[in-house]
Amino acid sequence: MAATVPHPVIVENRPGAGGTIGADIVAKSAPDGHVLGLSNLAPHAVGPAVYPTIPYDPLRDFTHIALLGEFPLVLAISADRPWRDLDAFLAAARTRPATLNVGTPGNGTAAQVSLHMLRTLTGAETVHVPFRGGTAAALETVAGRIDATVAGFGELSGNDRLRFLAMASTQRLPTRPEVPTFREQGVDLVATVWFGLCAPAGLAADLVDRLHAASEAAMSAPDAVALTARLGGVPRRSLTRTEMANFVRSEAERWGAAARAAGVRAE
Image (cartoon, rainbow, N blue to C red; front, side):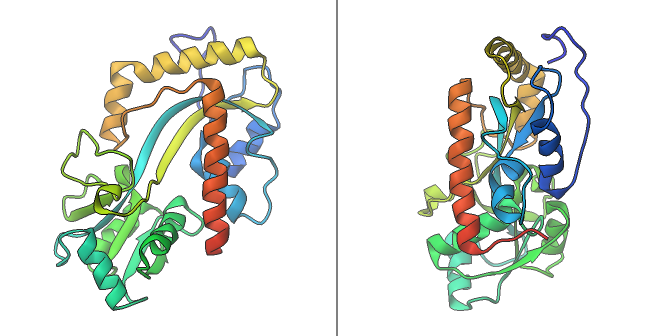
C-alpha cells in the first residue's frame, strides 16, 4: 500500500488476546485515516463470543474497508494413519466416540469452533486438544501422539508427513487441487480465516474510498497474489466497502452463534 498512499505505511504489531488488544487500539483511535487495523476472524467474529468481556463492538466501532484474503482451515492426519479419506475418519470417530484426539492452535480459536461445527454436522464426537499454534499440533499429529489436527492450511502445508483429508473452503485451492473440500464430501462446513483492512468508526467517505482503492491495488499486485497462494489462500474476492461491512456482520453472527452453542471460551 505504501506505493499508492501519500504517507509511509508502518506495521505495528500488538499481539495478545486473540487479536483483541490490537483491535481495541484501532477502535479507540481518531478516525483520521492515520491508524488502520488488520481486521480478522479472531477479534471481529470469534473473540466477542469467547472472551468474557470485549472493550469494543466489532461492527459499531469500526469502518470495515476491504477484504484482503481468506485462508481455509483444514483437517489433517499423519500419513501413517489408516484413514484414506474424510468418511473413514468420521466413521472411526462415530465408532469410538470421544476417543480420537484432535489438536487445534488453541482454546477459543476458530479451529476449535470449527471442530464443534464438524461434530454438529456429522455426529462425530472427538476430543479437543489445544496447543500454542497449529505447527505444534501438526508435530504432535505426525508423532502419533494425537490423531488429527484442524488448523490453517498455511500452518500445515509445509509438512509432507501430513495427509489432508478435507479443506473448509468453497472450492479447491489451485495450488493444492488434490485436497477435496468438506462440501465435496457431503459435509457443509466452510471455515476460512479472513483478513481485512479496517479503521475507527466515522472515517470520512473519501478516505474510505481511497484506502479501498489502495487495498485493491496492493492485493492485486503479482507478488501479493503469489504470496497469498503460497500461504494457502483461496483466490481473493473483491468486495465493496458495503459488502465488506455486511460480510463482517454475517461472520460475527455465524461464528458467534456457533461458539456460544458449543460453550467455547478463551483461556
